[in-house]
Image (tube, rainbow, N blue to C red):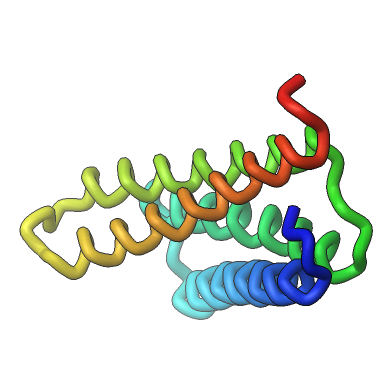
Length: 134
């Protein structure tokens, strides 16, 4: 939990924008599937699940930070767990793709893992500051 309200609001705005972008991407994927009349396969289900989890948790944390109604220690731990789970899921998903030789896939996956890992670490730190280590 940042001590400065300006930093807290900035992080909240970034998380809110990230959540909206993820849910917007989910809506776009669903629209494209409906427009094409295609049935989603396992890869698309995984992508849609990651978008829901990332968008929902980022949206909830960003909304709480912008509104000044901060999460409890348990809430921060739950968000940290979701972000860590997303980082692991993206890494596994990148490893399961058929074209492993593509550096684009690994660079994108590495950036996503670093971003979600940093968000998880920040949420764990906020949980420690907010409620101790219980």
